[in-house]
Length: 260
DNA sequence: CCCTATGTTCCCAA
DNA sequence: CTTGGGAACATAGG
Image 1 (cartoon, helix red, strand yellow):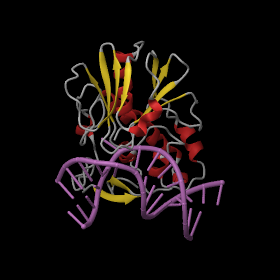
Image 2 (cartoon, helix red, strand yellow):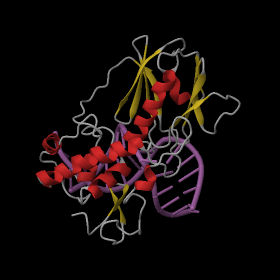
Image 3 (spheres, rainbow, N blue to C red):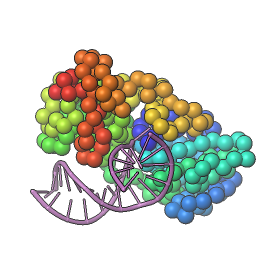
Image 4 (cartoon, rainbow, N blue to C red):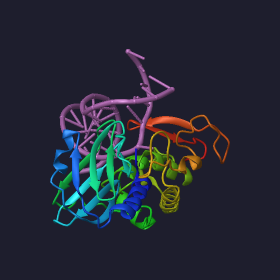
């Protein structure tokens, strides 16, 4: 579920709680996460976000990497009496414990030494989304603009909700070929990207169904969605009906008259 | 039973 | 090589 704003929210909150703290122990419940063992006694030197992934730097030259994929959640508990449903792993600290919950079990938690491999052209579209740069990267690509925005090798962090919202804000049809956008349209996309993602971070993310922050609270950006999950509702600009169609297997919400 | 789901990766085909 | 489609992963909810 989590995209850039949700992961940024967790990153901020984790820093408040576990920075410089020592891992007292780890309880791996889902054997898929076995690679995360052997972190007992390590201190958390830093917590950083890379796209939709979190990287916790340890004091032994390793990193604890976390990707929540579709349904992953993190929860900080100071009351240990209850183990949430679908808990896959718990990490104990002196003052509380970090619980990794993941019903669909797509999430990844692993401790490794390696650095991240692939180069990402735009590492943070909530901060440095230059229209010129993004246009350069798009080059001659014929892939739909929405698929391009969601391609994690190009731009790190944009997923289905925010791709729909950004393209609506920029009045661009999600099916347009990336190479076909004008300079002016790229400017609109880049500005919408920074503005929407930053606003969503302030709102601590979008809670459509089960997203919760580190302390179990819902986000607030769902109240500001213009098209995502607004199927059939009136477009805020032209009052026509928002439509939902499928693009590369993903539900895509847009206004057919405002997005060209 | 059907369809849907905020993600990524892999296989296959054009 | 590029691109797109579909399936897979695994589970819950409408």
